[in-house]
Image (cartoon, rainbow, N blue to C red; front, top):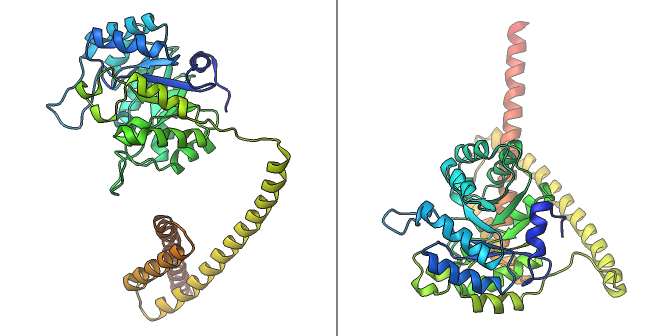
Length: 377
């Protein structure tokens, strides 16, 4: 696990309910003083790292519960003191930051609807300039790694030093069992490009239902995440927002107890000897894959020559449909996931089109230069 700086180390050290991990838990929305005190005392006994609560709720449509607003900040802070844990709250505009700082909120987070908008992120970053506070940044709603990294960079340039990433899933056009599709490759890319940023998983927003929270949380552990953010309500059925994805404290206890955090490496002889040999085999196969792709693109370049010569379109819809159908069917015979094969060949096809258009552009450019040269002569 990556090293965690000062403010976050305090959170990590409090994660008694999931050893060595940060656990931020609490209701989707702060609804009343009594609700917050009840949930805080019950979660405090579990040894969570921090208590979360939504004060301002940017709902998708008007008319639904929008949060109690600034009125709830003292309730959140008092609940944290009673449970002896830091408290965390979402902010979406500079006035939210002002109110949180005035009430001593320990951790702020930027939601997915905020991260997606560089104007909003910059306004918050400007307000946080010079402020010593931990800021967590959820991924943007749409699957765009650059927006996520850009939000983190804006905060860094404003002088915020304690930053955490939160993976809460993405809105896509695909129909899946999830409320927000995980698309694990995007947080993995964040990890590759910003390995120093601690990463939490929010399985509540990914799942949208309590049955899917546990497997998503375990997958996060398998991917070596630094912790979890989970929505917990004393009485989920009565929650004023997102009732279907909130668990009870008792269910959170059993969920966390069932998780099996993974380690990155081990020196056990059997593992070292077998995995080293298998990885060498993978390295060789990967080189063969690259060689095959390079040869495929050479053939594509040759095809583009004949297409150009005979005035044929670069994109061939019928041929493309036939390729997808055949490759997916062939992949299934080798127990490969159809979506994986489909997605893989979409990338390959996109690159093939780019090669053909590049080749056409190069030929056109050469022709233009020749014509220009003949006129000069």
